[in-house]
Length: 335
Image 1 (cartoon, one colour):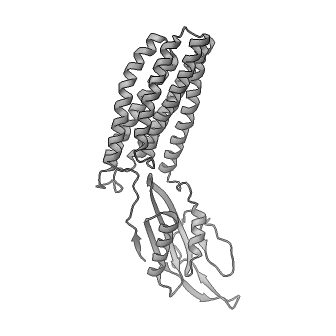
Image 2 (cartoon, rainbow, N blue to C red):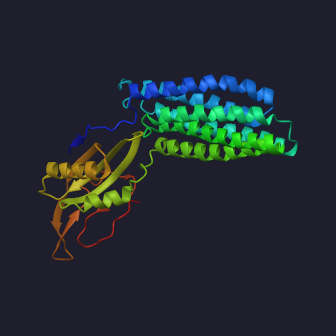
């Protein structure tokens, strides 16, 4: 029996560079948000106030991202054997939830204003929104320079990107109010922003939830992976195969591999690790490799492999049991 680990981990956070770009975006957003709240009240514009509220969540999301980056950089210690890497996933989930909550509140206010449109100062809305577009383009560019493979950074990026779309919609609404007097354009612009917020929020909650539930990463099918492993000459069975993400871009795998009696178990382990690294980018592996017994079959001249070695081993196997059996091409599924 052997436990082997690959140590070349791909981390989703790049430290100082990410913190620098996120801090620049935070300064831009907080500065403009303070001005926008005042103008939104003066212009009586829900679209501007909704943009300001969204910018507040932008700022909060960036602060969360900065905290998560600092926590994720801490080494593993004590009971936290993976360190604090999943702090960034908590941050991403919080960002997704705040987007959805804010979308709910803005929907209520927008519908209310559609039914009873208030007086809106179109020129002030248009000028502020255009300035907001410029600020958000700069903030979006700054965050895009950080490592967006991190779900944490992606959460902050989605917040700011949606805010940019919101300012564009608000500018169009301000122009319509200014040129046509159509006050409901303000509420309609808000609903457009809400739709974008819901889409981004659901995506963040779904992806962070998959990581918390230990689901296989996108693009990795554990069943197909198990079948590839048993196709390696000398491998009889693969079971208890688990593939999960510790955090963004940091994939781990564990499995129990049974190899043919007399086969080079260490050589096969190295072949499996090479395949996982080369084809799937998985370098953090824990493989338990054992030999199987082989006896002559009483029903045929060919040899049947008896699996597993111990009757009570893996009594409650998790997921499919992938077997390479001469008498059957199908994989047996654990009860």
